[in-house]
Length: 431
Image (cartoon, rainbow, N blue to C red):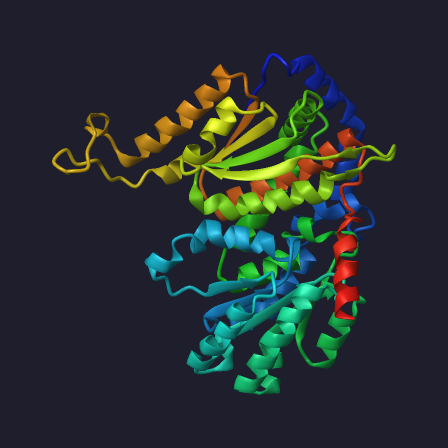
């Protein structure tokens, strides 16, 4: 993974370096968190990809699903499901409808949608045995409205089709150690996994929350964790500036100079859900009041290159200069080996003799050049490939960046107090 920053006249590199120096003491704290085996610190989320005890338990207890599962029904909301979806869509789900793979399919439920839930009845009717389906329910508190509503209906349909015992055997619950949900699941004989108390949903993809469904889906969780381990270790190195500290410092200085939108410009369409995962990470972690009462935060947006250039290109280059852009790409995935045909009715002179990936690269470089010409700040992150290892490294890098950014903003990166405002209203209306 390569990181390249581009500043503008309004963003002083001296100020960026000053921000990075301010982060030095916190970097030492993050190093301590890497060794926090009891997860006493909220920063101990950095420890999660190194937790061999959890990994061994997951491998041992999910082995019985290997080779039999055809569909994983994933129930959660926010960080409890988004990380898994990001990996799945990047590695398999984007072109699933045309690739015809026999690997297990993922169906995620994050909102209560009756027509989608109803379609599960048809899916279950086509199954010859309960072992073809695995239902995974994730809720840290065990009381969140949306996942419990979906799980209630899905499990009822599962039970009606195959019986209570079979449905329970094929259901996995991941929740807080003492949550009412995990207690109920254990009483029903379901397989359960605990979530570390101080690791929030948006930071949980390297725990059972992400590893259990990814393992059952047949993805390489060892490579995924290896990438995360490397990124967390590099990001907490006190001897030299880490990529995470650089990214956080540039982003913070851009905010001080008026940037209020942070746009993730994904140059591979299969990475779109990864962008959504980051949007939640940024919004929930930074969008809040500081201790002095000042409200801060970025509005995260996602654009796809080159698809969205025709819809927002005018806004980017001709509208308000209030955005900071991070380009994310995997150039090796642009190459298919196909060459443009000169005798096709669909041909331009610039196509002659070129492979298809050259067009995407030209657009990518052209957009970045236009950003430079218009003095728009950006960062480029290029993945070596779209693989479990690179995706694990990217997600770990962004998590550490957010921790550093929260320090600069003087906000708590781990809570989300304002989310309760809508949840309490939902409970009131249902009551």
